[in-house]
Amino acid sequence: MIEAFLSRALLAAIRIGGLMTFAPFFGNGALPNPVKAVLTLTLTVLVLPVYATGTAPTAASIGSWAGMGLSELAMGMMAGLATQFVFDGMELGGQIVGFQFGFSLANVIDPNSQVEITVLSSLYELVALLVFMNLGVHRAILRAVAASFQMVPLGSLANARLPASELLRMSGAMWLVGAEIAFPVLLATLLVDLTIGFVTKASPQFPALFVGLSMKILLGLALLYATVEFWPQLLERYFSHAVSGMERLLTIAH
Image (spheres, rainbow, N blue to C red):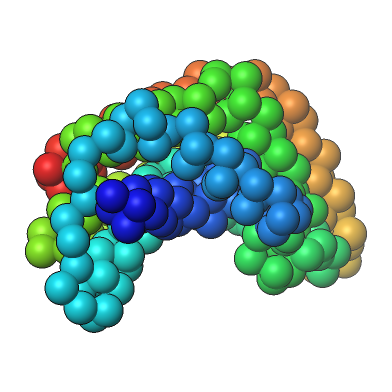
């Protein structure tokens, strides 16, 4: 009896721990690991008696139990990545815009990936996080994970095929978000480059580097200010698709 309970509790903690590792906000590198551990333990205690009430399959050997643990970890990781792709798309859009502005030389360390990113990428991610929290997507993620224990019982994924192809298809949101966010500024700066190129061809003494970079920054910042009000609607659509995709992952795994 105690062994069965501990088995269910550990498998549930592994699934929730996978979510805490990769989900936006919960898996943020700025959040200390002890805090993540406490959150994982708290969620396990809250979820286990309500949702994960079934009987976890008994493992005949250490290898089979390890297989169940890895499948639960993969399930939590996929649930977290479904929405993390939107944040990656915002970071990509910021990288593109920062490169066009000439900000690629001024980088900061991203606490999630521990790599250098442009200042605009960090700004874009912070805006996405504000929209994420304002829309309550973090609560939708927790509800989906809680429901996953009923849709996909603990230990049942060990012999099932994980929906990796569906997750790969969902990763396309990263490129779509980045393209839509960066397109207005990218188009404007490309037009400035073309204009400066024609002017330089007609007048070789024209200070193209100084004027062109200044014009791109001023025009790009003006467009950024004008289009940022549309970001919440754009991000709401992609976050909604991400949560729906998470539900599809659970359905396929079920």
